Length: 360
Ligand SMILES: C[S@@+](CC[C@H](N)C(=O)[O-])C[C@H]1O[C@@H](n2cnc3c(N)ncnc32)[C@H](O)[C@@H]1O
Image (tube, rainbow, N blue to C red):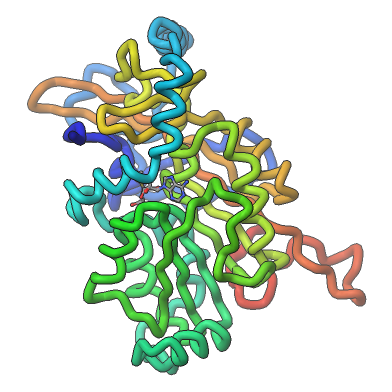
């Protein structure tokens, strides 16, 4: 039976009110600041629902570390094996219970990830045939000029906002999840348009399995709170496999749980699978990343850093006078663009055609 807040924090995103992302390393793209609210006087903490860019004190960090260590005794290997081998069944159960009521559409998506709708023009009608026959869908995919894949799409809380917001007539959105229940929910959504979208069942960690997408054809791959659901040992191969699908100049976008997020600190004894990797009450698994770990995963897959940010936010329950420290990590990593021969050596870092986002 699913715990009521099985994937607590996924909804935590940036929220429409905005946030500040602190950029701990040099050379990253700075995004415009918006809706920032800083807590300068701790006595005022209960005056708002959330505070941005919260600094952690050394004591707070040490206390979080201690708490994690106290609960880090791993479950026996046979239990771990069961959670791993039945991972998609636990997610199927999750979606059978919650259907599409759990995750909310995220309108912050386009502020954080403008790559999802770079040339958005609201008056465009799709010229692609949306009649939904296999033939027309194949044509749509072939003629597409901007292809996005969302991995671990759940019930489509990212996919449907993209289809609604990005009216580029050349857009085609692929989305997959290893939960067949989730994919069925995507396909049965009235907004599912087979002329612009293709949902399929796929296990990201099965690196031998083929994607129904040729290599080097995707402009964008989106991973929102999905990499953390994989066993840490499977993460590198999964990211490297995905990187093959990106065009030169294409980007991988990720938002996921950061180390010592409230959701990690709430895990009690008997839930730890390995360091920073846990199983929730409903059998779904979750890892909590550092920025460096994600950097390593992407660069090992031969992708270049565009952005690697930590978003530390203090959420406040004013009624119960509770404070909740959230930590999320947001990354953009790009496959190196092909250099046109005439600009070799002087034009590195340009966007590929179609990816109209300024990274400079
Ligand atoms: C926390 S949910 C996030 C869902 C969605 N990205 C969103 O933000 O609404 C994690 C999703 O990843 C999917 N998932 C977990 N492991 C996966 C894997 N190995 N391959 C494909 N999907 C996976 C789950 O079924 C679930 O839908």
